[in-house]
Image 1 (spheres, helix red, strand yellow):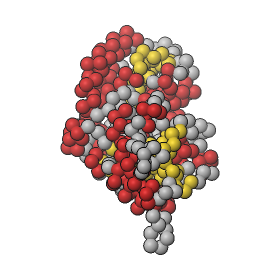
Image 2: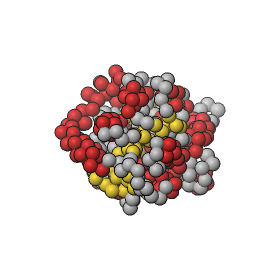
Image 3: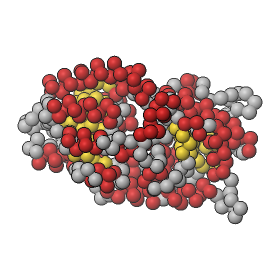
Image 4: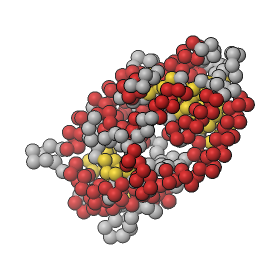
Length: 398
């Protein structure tokens, strides 16, 4: 769109979690430059914005794991072809890609062939397994914007431009309200993720764990926060034997007040993902489970370069949240870990309380960069400034 006064920015959010962050970033950019217009690939959050023209839907891309992606590949390739045509037609001033590297790397390549500058918000977690991809980013991306403190050192090894802005999750949490919520003894939260594959593989194990835990602790209550767009009856169908002898009752609640729910639980059992970082920030001890198709696991295990899967463990540099991966994520193992946490030690001290204490520094570590950006500000405002200042430096009227 070049040099007129209303630059068009193309946003590429490759999954639903990225859509939420992308919409917040777009709002922060508009606050600093109300003339900017957006178009691209978005989910419900971006599509709700008047200034965003949706050409493609994130929902078309919601797949997980290598095996699953292969099945969807023809559709994804067709979509990419349409994205390229639209980019060539609109010629946006710049491109902002949000996370989702397996999709967005292809979009970046197109943008560079069309000579459109690229900003990568929520820099991809290539340090976990595909470190050679850093060279692709160095060549094709103008500026990386990171929300994880340890990424700076990794990317600087490749002599790349990276801005750490703090983590937007810190700004999304109503801290005064959360600090007034205490954990309810015996309340166990279940967070099985939002992807169908995650739910169908983990929910039965969470249910088995609950039944085993209930035998030892009949006072426990299990509550599951249902992710947006997930059918309650379908989700419940994976929870074993609620009405049967020995099955654990399960309460299902909508996701509207998720943070208050998580903060009010004594502990959580959750699918690996952003939710485990949210739990850590909220100070709620969490057992992390992860289960994918055997093919994905076989390939992934050989590629992963980091000691932990959970961001909270990576940031703190130790396995504070137990990680039960693949066949380890059985109901028996989950129950054993949970009961160990729920049982006071010989001196009568709660292991859960010790975990809560160790989680306290996380908020400071994750929020530092965005401090002082004003009410409702923080990391997203900082990210918007990084992009707009760089566009101005290029003469793109950011």
